[in-house]
Image 1 (cartoon, rainbow, N blue to C red):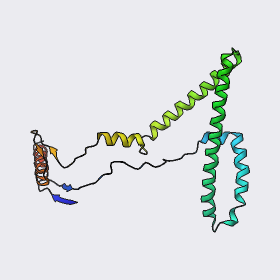
Image 2: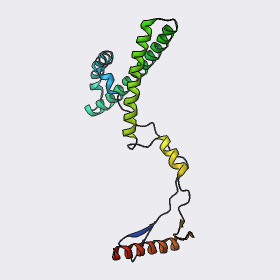
Image 3: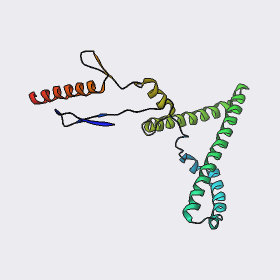
Length: 189
């Protein structure tokens, strides 16, 4: 990387060469606890039972912070397992309600409508959260869109007159010209 002085500006030009990987490694992402499950009696009861057991493990750890790190992982695993089980039960409930509606049960129609309303509300909440978090962390879709529209060769630029400048010295000279032109505009403004 080189820094080149531009005499007609208070800015410097940086010439850098980067080798970017063709594939960006994507991690598992950020896990967040679904806070709605905290209000469910079944989750709280299971959590309290497990937490009492986890407290008995405290003497086996060198420090309370090590124990707490272990407990946090256990909480995460329990919450994920609980949500997976809950989702499976909901899918089974949906299938059962659909079958009952097919057989003409009028109470099943109302129950199915209530179920679908709850599902719709959850989808709207998730969509709002995703929209807010879209700028927080890159996703696979982000990397794919960036890589598909990325400039693969940043070693040249197109000058105002349409000519292509590709050598580093020419790029610096063109930048000096642009800065000088901007300084003239500012000076006459």
